[in-house]
Length: 323
Image 1: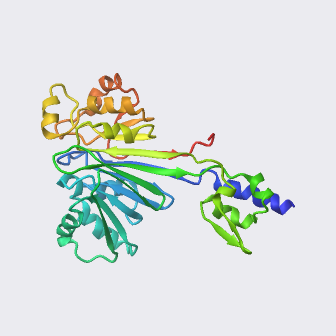
Image 2: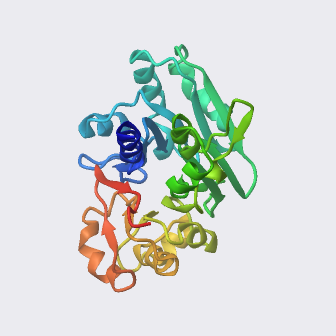
Image 3: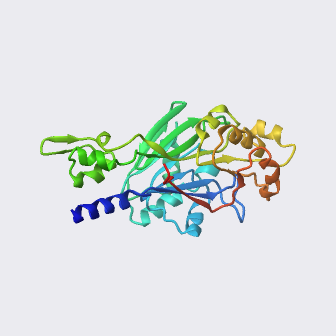
């Protein structure tokens, strides 16, 4: 009986807070890199798997500065194929290969993905791992890769462009009394809690037998190179973090933003005000915008929880233990 109590305690300690989502904004620049600002890239890490969105020039350097390895990257999502979002890929692939990676790498992006990547790989032709391609064709698509649920949604730029929402779902609480009352063997608890269906001695055990209703997970929404469109606020709604392009902060840039199909700080803030994420980080600054923080007070009049992000800004998101 004492051993059973110990095992139950150990099981719940293992289940508490297992998932954490690390987010690092590796590069915050648009169009061209600056000495203190690399081009667009964001990395997420969860449960031993890394996910990269965009891979602008300088992404490898930013990873080195952060101390994060490119080897565990399992998936790279591309918003679109302008050079400031893809030019860092050949070198990154070579570095991953030199790190003796052998697992397949999944690339996700708009139509034309394989053609673009094959062209870039002329200078990185031999890799010790397989590259798999998933080309987006619908206005909205959802897929699951490792611990991530990835929602891709089309936005409004000069070329086909997608935003992404990355979610970590969370199952319901494990109900100890239900598990005991149904005589479910303790050695199955952990796998049932992870969502697996198990069979033992001719009896089928399902997660629904031991879990309560699903709880709030973690959610990060990312979009760059677009005009403000309603779908962005829809996907950003109630996100733990909303990372949004702010190409221009200066007054008088509204016409240029419309012409180039980008956003001002204030248009981004209005989307955040509608979506109400816990926090918004601005990114993808114009090279002429050398001090984005100078405009942040005015932006916060629209959405107070706004940060003018800099390269390397990081957050660790955790499940709410109170839920």
